[in-house]
Image 1 (tube, helix red, strand yellow):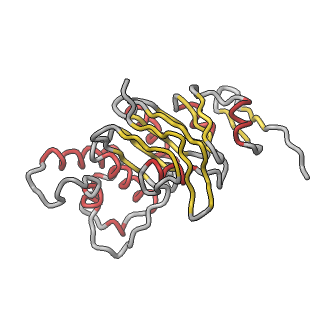
Image 2 (cartoon, one colour):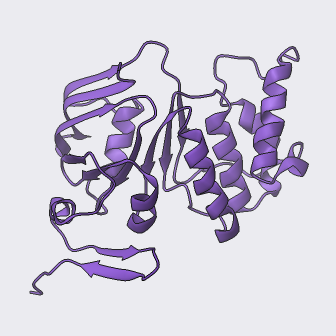
Image 3 (cartoon, one colour):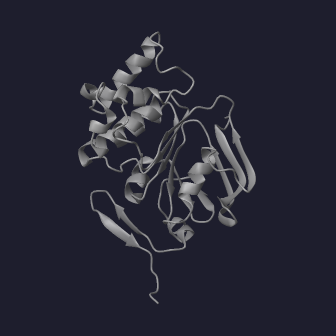
Length: 245
């Protein structure tokens, strides 16, 4: 199986401060990797390296030729007064095609399909500034999917999304994973454990676990106490022992 993307001994950071060191990760077709870790541990830095927004201090980023990546950032900053429609925002995810080429009938149909899924079909021609935060997040999810990516990267995808749609979102990700690899960053460890196939813990380095089970090994890789809420018939909590100073 040919890897879609591979990080080899990556060290990265900002100016002269190293945030990540010795990171190795391989993403294969139809992988579903949950990325977890404490605040400040380097999750955002990792995503920037993956997206080639931040050149590493050392190491290599190897991508499959022609790899298409869809990206849903945690926070989407947009000028609500900017005159752009929902449809145009989604189409902007196809960087290699003109927004105004009317011959792309299949692309237009794809926009309709995506908007129908997220329940926003009636907002197709609305100004993006007229939408709520949750609605905007749905539109940007459509934007991430419009190019039919091989790899979908989501940074806290449930940010701003209402609870009703959140359940639909996670069902969608399960369906999407049949056709594409997914990297999902989330603080909702319980949800991640029930959805993903493998887990990568990021805290200065990267500890990869070829399983979706949260074990003591996973907890230790954080180097800090975290609380896990297990969603099951009998919900329970696991809290790592730690000393208070």
